Length: 292
Image 1: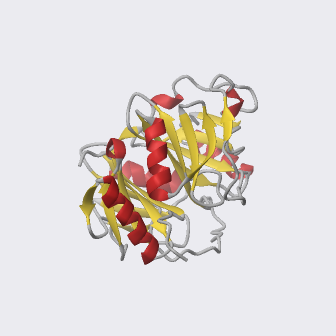
Image 2: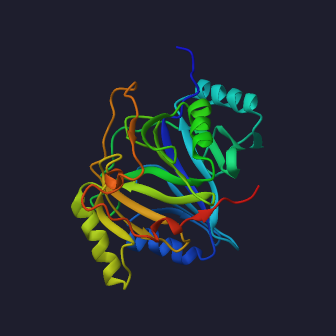
């Protein structure tokens, strides 16, 4: 079968942080991730049986360094590389820019997002740690100035499909059976709003709220059931200023040709099925892209 140049999984998120200790403490003590490796300047964390799904690097800024996207094999990697070349996007590195990745390349896409494309042997056996850890990294939500253009980029270069579309402002896109691996939101700034992790069930969301309360912190929003994706979710702000979403019960899409659902932006059922309320300040959070 001819390679299509398709992303198969959201691999990891790499963030810069002004307070590495606080970021690690939040990830391990509050959120339940496992610290697989760390130095004085860098930490690797995961929920699954892999080296990392989240990376923090000490910096003088809070920002997104890059995001890692997985392809199934070398042929898919080369097919995406060919599309990147045709699009004229700037290559950052012909080799992986992150540790513990053997094969891949990195480039800067529209609006300054850096993407690490790499091969990884997929493990379909979901590791259950029996702890407070999430099941896995599920998706990211990025803020952009031109959502339609960013959506076309994801279609053309990564072979994503639109699952839900909110007017011409917000797009939920999938690369596998998950309802979305990336959400693209229109904003007056660019960067990442949140990284989202799958929970085993709604009680895991409750326990996260309890752990935050015991530390004198609070959820920023939730619990809420979204219309786009149908997932139940809670949100809180991590030390970098990015938001962490913890969710369960998301729609899975087994028909790769399932057409996109279209929503009127004024119909807030798309974002909150239960009461239509959205905290005014929730979208003010997020961190910018690192400039390369």
